[in-house]
Image (tube, rainbow, N blue to C red; front, top):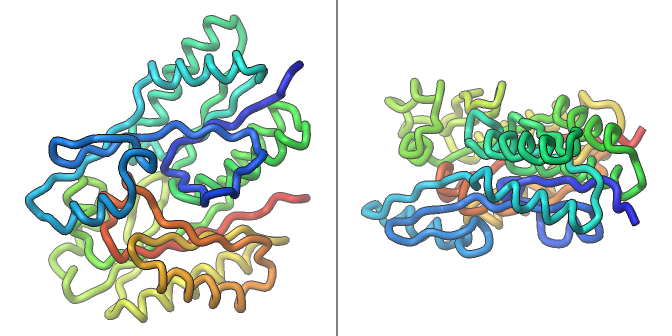
Length: 292
């Protein structure tokens, strides 16, 4: 019996535990390398592991994508389980080679099948800005939507995604080579607390604020404005790394100020993103529900 469409994503979606229960979602993990130790993001290496190693400046923390062969193997397993189609949605290609690995695997699987059974989406984002569109698409699939409808739901949801994040320091982004246009702020990094966002798949500076409290308040204001600019209900995520108390406080404040929030989740980013943003990071993601 056909099981319809399954949505594949990667571990940087950072879906909170249990949120995908019963949905056709499969997660392929990225990899983290800490000195002479390496493992799968969220499975063998936790956020706490990365925080501990980042504070040991003598230990280098890096990340790597899954290989095309790993994607081919997983796609074939899902097809063998009875799924007819796969929509594979991944971290921005500007931040990782994961999308390209998935694309190469899709080319091979589609060639073997003689038709397009795997479609790959470059989300141009990450974290729950990726995770929510995956959930939206998977909920469509679970309701019996066609493959085209599942694919379109993911793409449409990504089009209206807003993301804002604060870091205590730009140093970790600099070490990982992900700092992009924000490099211009490095000389004044001690004097400001940066608010950043993803634009066209890249990390770019948004605003400079003098203190951490003011930066978080400003980020909240930006998220409220983004939510108010969307017709209908919105999905909201608050991310953090080793800053759970601040994240919960921010979640409560957002719940009060955005009455149209259908869902607000708090999720700690995992080892891969954590390696690049460092302890103390906070982020807010706003995505439309697309219920209409």
